[in-house]
Image 1 (cartoon, rainbow, N blue to C red):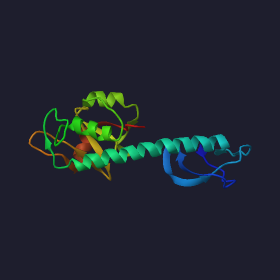
Image 2: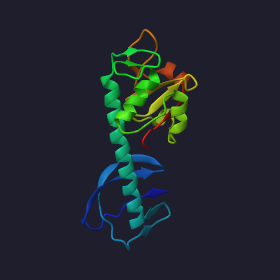
Image 3: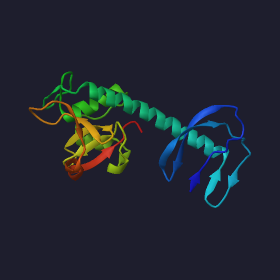
Image 4: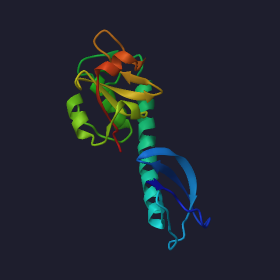
Length: 184
């Protein structure tokens, strides 16, 4: 089913995200909708209630995306810091310490260890639907990184290494065990 918005009167300008089968297609300015107007076809349903729902979803997504941007920027700022098992910063991190601190900077509190992080965040995400800020888990959820977008993640790899940004190639795809979207 396609959800649309009737642009009837330019009273109040808002931003809405257009959705098709649960997948965001893009954003556009939406004018307020006349309350009594509704249009129905076999594939399209448009009402004022739909407009309100779309606007609410857009506001929620926008807030999550701002938080995700903050988390990614924080993780990027740590690139080059040393890895230390149990490291919670500053300047030394383990994988979950970095992920947790990045999202804490964005106002989202997460548990300390990877397994608990995965369980605590309700919004699960598939490999093909990753967005910047998502937490990506590997090795049966024993390792976590912050997805930076465009096929890259930032993580604290292991002893003797430093926090770095890496390409999520076929190796990581093979050991991938899940992803979550904090703040959603």
